[in-house]
Amino acid sequence: MTTTISNTKLTAKINHKGAELFSLQANNTKTEYIWEGNPDFWGKHSPVLFPIVGTLKNNSYILNNQDYTLSRHGFARDMNFELIDKTENSATFSIQSSAETLKVYPFEFELQIIYTLEDYKLNIQYKVINKNQSQLPFSIGAHPAFALNGNFEDYELEFEKEEPLIYHLLENDLISSATETLEKQDNLVKLNYPLFENDALIFKNLESKKLTISNNEIPFLRVDFQGFPNLGIWTKKDAPFLCIEPWYGYSDTNKSTGNLFKKEGIQILERNEVFDSKFTIEII
Image 1 (cartoon, rainbow, N blue to C red):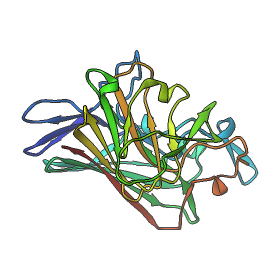
Image 2: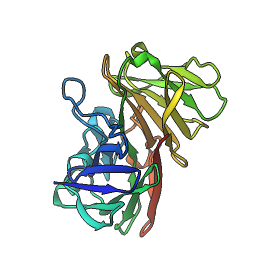
Image 3: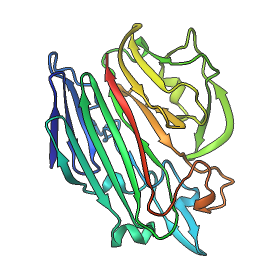
Image 4: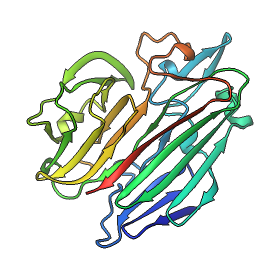
C-alpha cells in the first residue's frame, strides 16, 4: 500500500511498509530524485532506522541481565505503518510497540513519521513518544538514496562549513577507531567509488548541517539536517546513487559493553517525553 502527496512543485510517494519514501519527482520535468531500488545494487530507497542505527556488537545488547538480539538498523523499516493523517501535501505514519517488538526491544513507544511538501522542499519529521514508566533508549536515522544519473565522478558534495572532514570507517559493520580525512577543495568533495570501498563514511561530529549534491558544479539537491549530530555517506561500487544519512546514533565499536543505556550516541527519552526532529530534502 502506498500514499502520494503533492503540491504545485513536487510529488512524493511513500510505501506504508517502513513508511519508506520511494519517489520524489519534480512536477514540471518528471525528474526522479530517489533511487529506484534495483536489487542488483541495493533493493531499498530510503529506509527509516529505528530503534538502532547501524549494528550492535554481536547483534545483541544486555538489559536487566537478559540478552536481546536486535538486527542491523532495527525493525521499523520492516513494519507496516498506519496512515493516521493525510492532506494533499502531507502524510503522517505511525507504528507502536507490539508483542513482537517487545521480544527484541522491551520498551513501549510510538514512532511517527511525517512527510510534508513545502514549495521545492520535502520535510521529513520524526517523533518518538515514550510510553514507558521509565526511560527509553533509542537511536533513529534516515537512509535516503539519491539517484545520480550519468557518470558518478561528475558529481560533487559541497559541505556547508569550512572544517576538516574527519570520518570513521566501518569494519565488519562496526565503527573503527581509526579515522581518515576527506580531501576537499573549496568545501567541495569530488565523488568516486574508491571512497566507499570500505563501506560508509561515518561523521560523528560534523559542523556542517547542509550538504549539496552538484553535477559538474551545478547544484541540484540539498539535504538540511539541523540538529542531527551524526551523518553517514554511502554508496555501492558502480551504483548510480548516493546516500546522505542524518542520524542520532551509529554502530557499536568492538569495545562496546552491550549496555544499551551507555551505548555511544544513544538518545535517552524520559517518561512521557516526545523526541521531535526533522530534516529536509530540497530540489534546487
